[in-house]
Image (cartoon, rainbow, N blue to C red; front, side, top):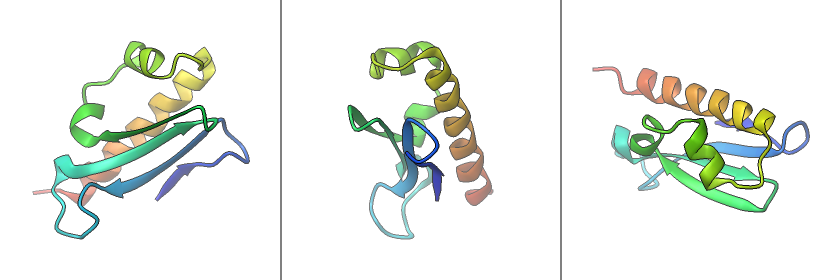
Length: 88
């Protein structure tokens, strides 16, 4: 699933799995969160449940406050999707 695209955002973000197959665990789920082709980071679910605005700012030093807010919305959507996909 794609959460944002460059046509209407400074972010391009999409959900991938760490292993590339359907047997990947919850912690192996990955969100690719790319900012303006300047910084392209793949984050695991496990990393994202701990991230905050300060962590985004440190990881993407070129981003504005609005971009940080948008990134947090994208991350929350990803976490919600993964939690729904891996309900016990």
